[in-house]
Image (cartoon, rainbow, N blue to C red):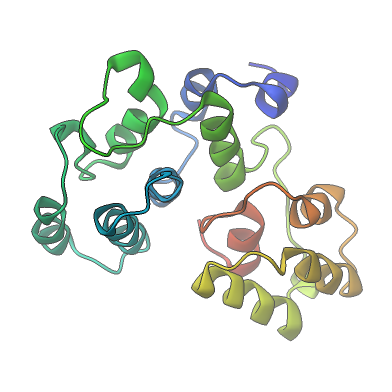
Length: 196
């Protein structure tokens, strides 16, 4: 895979395969949780799935707590059980090809799934280093607020705060100012907050 394939590719299966061995379990789980959150029908079950998946990804639930919470939610496919991060994320990526249409599990468009992968991973061909001087109190507070609230509408303000701190990295600034959807696990916020 080339960098252009990564940046412009619309086939999430190819993008996902490129990430094998290069992505943390937390990122995989947050990617899958973000996919659950994009479901068109936001019923109580889908909201609960998203929240449980996200809390587990962030280490706020144990596996036994997850197992207690997950059976209470509708699912026709045991492959969606989020015990193994890679398997769980793989179901999201390959759901259409493998016929996982059961229950209310999301069958998402390939461009959306590709975007979500890029949102949580960034560009693996051009890893970005955040300078310590860019982690000002303002930038950190804005990053924490975005992360905790799941309200990403102020991402352009975060870009301004980073720029005021001396950040001149176009990948970071353009990502923050992008009108594409941001999710918990956003690579810029994770980089700012020191999460992997």
